[in-house]
Every structure is written in C-alpha cells, then in structure tokens.
Length: 231
Image (cartoon, rainbow, N blue to C red; front, side):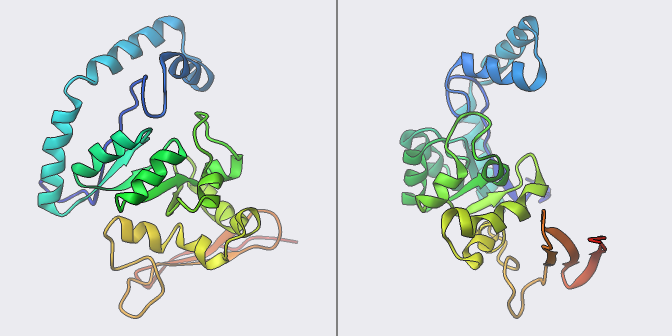
C-alpha cells in the first residue's frame, strides 16, 4: 500500500464460525472434500486459523486507514450478517465480495456498497460452500459484479447465460464484468466503450459450445489474436 502497488484491498477472514464457514463442521467438510485433508492436518489448520483471528479488527482498522490515505478501494469478504456489513462499511469498504445470504447482500446495497459474486457459481448453479447462489442474487437484483473467482474462464459463458437464466438484457449482463466492477474499484478510466477511456476490448466468438475470446486489446493495443477451428 505504501509503495502504491495495490489498487484494491480485500479483508478476507476464512476462519470457521463465520463468513464462508458457519461452523467447524462446514470447514472440516470443505477441506476434506477439496484437499483430502487428514484429521491431524485439519486440527493443525484449525488451530492456526483460530490463533490468527485474534486482533483481526485492530489490524483491519490500521490497514483501512492506510488504504484510504493512499486512495485504495476497500472490499469486505464473505459478509454473513447485517452487523458485519455495517462494521466493514464503517472501515470504508465500498465492495462486498460474496455476501453469503440475501440479508447481507441487501445490507451492503443499503450501505452503498457494490456486491460481487462468482461467475463459476453461475455455471455450477450453486456455491461451493452452500451459500447464496449467484443466480439468485441476480434475480433478486442485489448483484452488481461478477468475478472469475477460482476460474477466470467462467466469466464469458456465465455472462452470456444470464439473459436466458435471469431475464436480463445482454448489456446489463456484460456490465456485471465490465463497467460495474471498474466503477466499484475506482478504476474510472476503463470498463466501458467511450471516448477518452482506455479501450480495453474483447471480441468474442460464440459459434456453438462455449464462447471464446477471439481478439483482445489492452489500452487500444492488440494483445491477443486467436483462431479457432470450428470445422
């Protein structure tokens, strides 16, 4: 932050008992399913997480003050209650990443925060942790942005599915991965096709199957040109 290498600060707390993992059992099940973690390994990880949780708010307060001093946008993560949203908003958070339920998402919107959900959640039709579905967030009108999360390749297909799945216009769907996140992060020089903007552009081919990025321009300069054989 002090060296101005960061443009966004996200406060993530993955300790069990809140957020993504509402109890220790949910955390254990996730690690066993995803990483085949043994009981001994789990107990070590659990102890480390619980120890690291001490003093969280003090550290967050210090970092938030530095981020605001440097003009860096702040995001909360896995908000699971109105109280947590309010606490993070008081620190200056302007983005709520992956609110776990509708009440938290609505509270974030009420605070003027942009809400962000995962594109893979759209493709899978569910959260990998059993929390709020991204599609339900779109349907409820509480989703402002989609991110690649653990699979950047999910962005294009998820966006192009939304007009049919959620009944929204294509322009509104595209805004979830362009204009809206750019504005939320304070990146006012990009996110839309307009005079004076950066001209970060993607040409997409969708000839059946999954859509493909055919050409990419970064700041108006060609960065990728791909050719796909559809024969």
